[in-house]
Image (cartoon, rainbow, N blue to C red):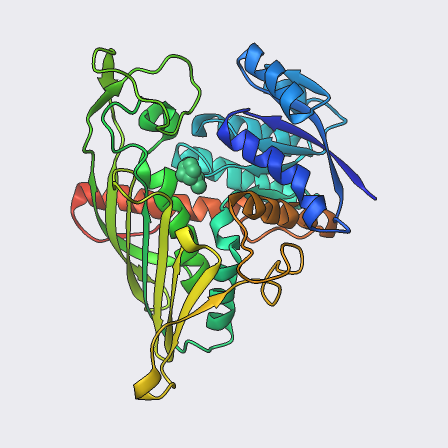
Length: 391
Ligand code: 4PW
């Protein structure tokens, strides 16, 4: 079986998710499209680099990503760093002929996002694959919703209503990680999580054409965190810790018009107590509706207009072997998959794309379009008017 040597940059939370995906993909999908070999892991903190090498089973570690990009043995690069490092690493890797899977949002600036999409388009001519890690569109229930749309079962799509609500930054003592700093992250909630539901909305209903938005920052300063490790709110710092200003958004609400003529709304915040990874997608068509909530990710609710009046209502489909990726996961609906399996599914699609020489549905161009929607949302929050998404 073909082997692909992996170099991974950024050994934090997302680095761990990629390692779990590389390791579990062939265990779930067998025969695998190719066998990932964990070659080199890079983190700028030497102790973290060495610790992750041992923990995750990489052959080598380093503290400078250029070692990975310049290593002729490396075939595939995972970019799991904070957002402002995506562009230099991904572009250099593509130019060196490596296939790249990069975490989302694609970049911390629109200019970087464009440069990455351009580099990916150029590399694609030589068969090099790029992929943005918008994994939630690969949840089997979301793919099932897409199937119902594509086959026309839901009729004309009228409205798409999405939320992405979390609570991990609702506590003012939750530290100022890089995710709250504009120069590193580019944006707050907008790039971090609204981008996921923008991606799902466009996957299901086509390109968003115009937006009108409101953006808010609730917690304007946070305790300074020692070191750059992203703690995602799991550690709180005391009231006496020195604080610094937050210069990104905590909440975004916006109305959207799709090119298809459909309309919709998107809301995202990391300050919603009681909501954890609350990604909801509700879509109304002329022949029916679907509803999805990631906190119950193995379920899709469907309502068919054609059902008789006295029994029309949402019914729950439990995804499993009859659905997308179901033959690779578990044998009975209700046994359920979670975040780990989802990242393995994403990795299967990435490695398959490499082996088949076909760009995946979340190639860099698609990540760049999500970024252009984000830019229109930010512009509209300033102008207080409808803004067009750049084509
Ligand atoms: O991409 C998102 C992150 O930045 C994730 O899917 C969840 O929210 C986990 O971390 C943040």
